[in-house]
Image (cartoon, rainbow, N blue to C red; front, top):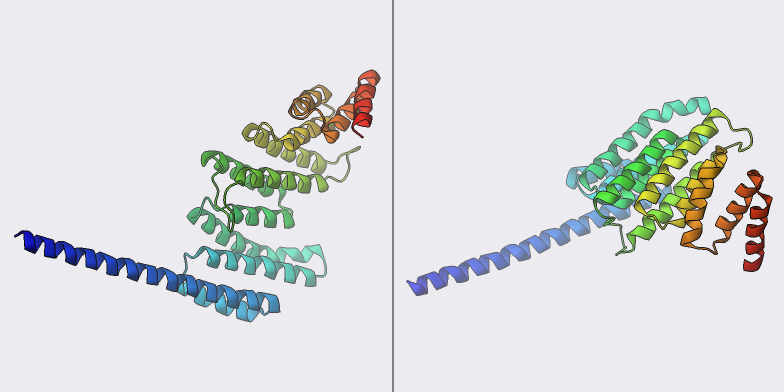
Length: 281
């Protein structure tokens, strides 16, 4: 009886070994197949061959519809196609013809994010394209959704070819996105309704970033700037003082302190910060 049981165990172990080897072979085969599709798509993309891109994607979707690189390639196809077409259009009125293609791009990236919610590059890709299309409400909303998800997973994102250090990636990206929105503000002295709306979006993003990363001095400073824009100087000073406590020698923060005190008519305090800036120089 023992001998028979022992023999059965050996059979099971041998079967498991074969299954593991088979699974490894399948995984390797899938990886090689995905790479082959990726190489073909990249070559077609570099050559600007739209027909070849479509052909590769059609085959790839059939063979590996859940492959994250397939999602990314499909998304890049739509984004690049829109870029090429937009460059040929005579005026902005014709851009509306590209809306269905943009919708297709967002459908692909949203499906990818739903399947791979912790891949940060997918969310960055979506945010970037919303900025290109100047869909600012959606741009800000997607940034906030990314920050909220980041909090939920304790900032443990996955990102191609990167291990660790994701907090810095998130905060630096938030700074880039806020800078993008700042660039879209046309007039600081006599702001339009669009300028005001943009500054409120920036404030939302900065405030949420500061909630998650209290020592992110750049976002604290940006938050103060939004209050300066609306002439809410006391609130601006409050956040600038907070930034100053994080780094008493931050040149940008000191300069903003000087400027806000000058706007408030507090010349003596403004001079103190000017002197501190000179000492740093």
